[in-house]
Amino acid sequence: MTALRRPELLFNHFANYAELVKAEVASIGTSLAIRAACAALAVVALMLALGLTGVAVMMGFLSGAFHWVLVIVPGVAWLLTLIAATVAMRSTMKRKVDDMKDEVDADLKMMRLIQEAKND
Image 1 (tube, rainbow, N blue to C red):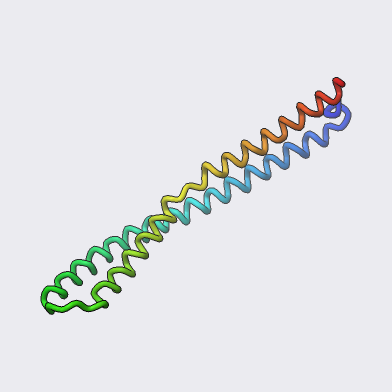
Image 2 (cartoon, one colour):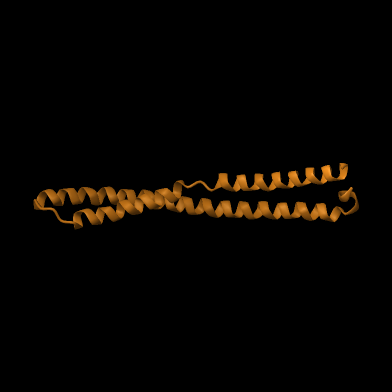
């Protein structure tokens, strides 16, 4: 009955849903761009880490002595690889979809409560 008496409320509600979906799609696009950039950075950092590790092993054997620099320099590249790969593999889409489902479920629950209140 409320929808028949005040249809603008229903239209406003659907417009708000459309705006929410638009914002979520925009944030998913941004998230995908960040993840793609981090994946590319992880690949480059991995190549650099492998190369630096190989050079450090060779230099360690040639010098016959242990130097912390031979561990720290490749370690920084490995750390960068780990951080970039972790960010690239992070999944935000499932969380966004779950948020939208929760919003719809909350609205449906509210509609049921209103319907039950009218029947009482």
